Length: 220
Image (cartoon, rainbow, N blue to C red; front, top):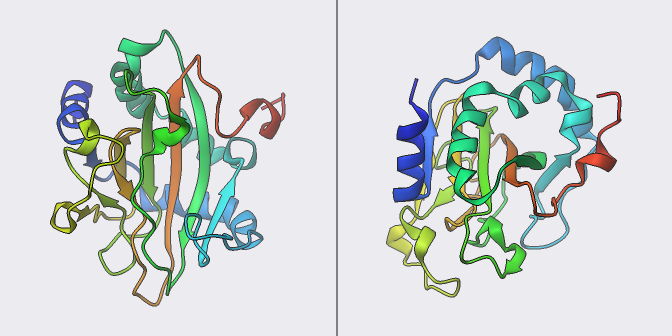
């Protein structure tokens, strides 16, 4: 039940915040039924960044009614609009993907999502990002690594190992984080998949990483 003022204040201060128990087990079950066929048909990544034991299934706006509910979630959009309001008149959907980290995957390199546009936007915050926990996120199964307070660090900053924390949360919760915070997927040392849905929003005047006008049918 956190207010947008509280969520935005946490994002400005720390760069990330977990909101607990946003969606129900029944919601997750229906979403999983809709999306599992696409996820199971997705091949592993092909390099160290995408992960050799990680699948990324995009185009969720056109593939799943439950994912559309997540994308248009009233409370999340309220937080998003308030956070990005200083930099645009309208936000847009930037990317939607299921990220499945399989057992044996190593930790992803620490990075900033804003680097999707290179390193030319240091004067604005371009993104409001979410990772919805479809399974529990634990330190063992690869919960996202985040460096709180790193949003204002230089792009070439050294990342002290003791500054990294993991976003452990129960299924149904959501990690909200800025495009500027340093973060990365964790290593999966468990025996089961870690599944999260990454939905990100960006300033209306920037190009999207996933072109929604091509990935989503006009009737949807």
